Length: 411
Image 1 (cartoon, rainbow, N blue to C red):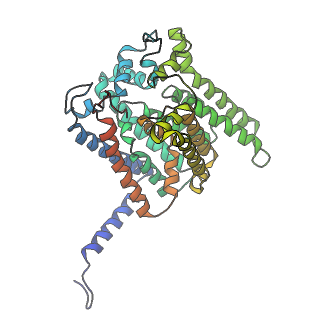
Image 2 (cartoon, rainbow, N blue to C red):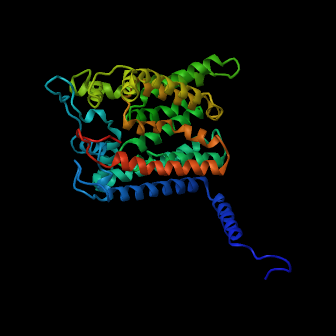
Image 3 (tube, rainbow, N blue to C red):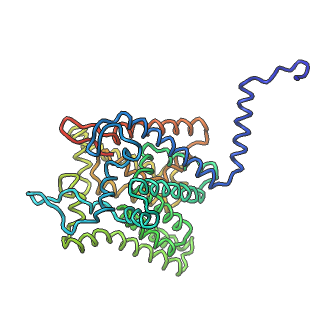
């Protein structure tokens, strides 16, 4: 019963109070429960997007129309990983009549299918079920490690929002399909976390595994080397004890060697020193020439003048972002990682629609995005944009729709 002259609480006030109490209750949960809850909701949303798009899917190279969830997420490069799981790698690089390498398994690193095979030996579950389970579990591990990494530079709320942005990024549905992205993301986050904490020797085995999951070893070794030089130059103001120097140097050497393991292994098995590089370029239909593909793609999209200017503008924008205040708050290790990986992409990547997926290792920028503003409206708007981007990505790139000239844009 309300007092004299008082108006009964309106529906808006009741809802606001309910939301406030809900937030207070959620804030009492352990950080790992909050992080896993956020990631689970993100993956549930992606699952619903996959299911909705699968209902519109026509016949594809992988099967009939309207596939189920497990069949739908098992297409594209998932089929290559399954082939590795069942057949392994060829002992000779298949080549066409012109001598160019044809698409084959050596473009895909061995750790993910090897773990699925080990899981099969233990559980008896087949690829179709076990591979998505492993990818999803690795995604949860990545989310927890990313939160721990972000907490080295920001508070709880900002770190959680950083995890939200990673978990809902437009290409984040890839983290629950039989690809190596989620496993690589977890190992990368663990390696960066150990580096930030100064545990360089502990980072070595994690980094070696990371280099066997996806081709990120070269930029990681470059980042570690640059960080060693940075620490050495600042040793007058920030002490660099001999033990720490030795550990960091060992990480630099080991990560550099680990980055070469896969090309050397391909060479050893096939007897062809160009086995890996020729296989990687099989998808682009030309030889590997550093930086050139970006200018070729720019010319194709924007004409001769735009073809020169567009990559330079993109590089300038990336450089500007690295010196922005939110990115500076990430500390030298994460900034050097983002810079090294961006240069690596610019030097070696053939830009295409798969480029969006290859931006995932730049995940530290998600924390920078949460640090741009503490405004709830800003963060929610960015979240909504990312969720909408998932719908676009799955509908446009993951689902198969043959182009007039044959094939489709790869995700």
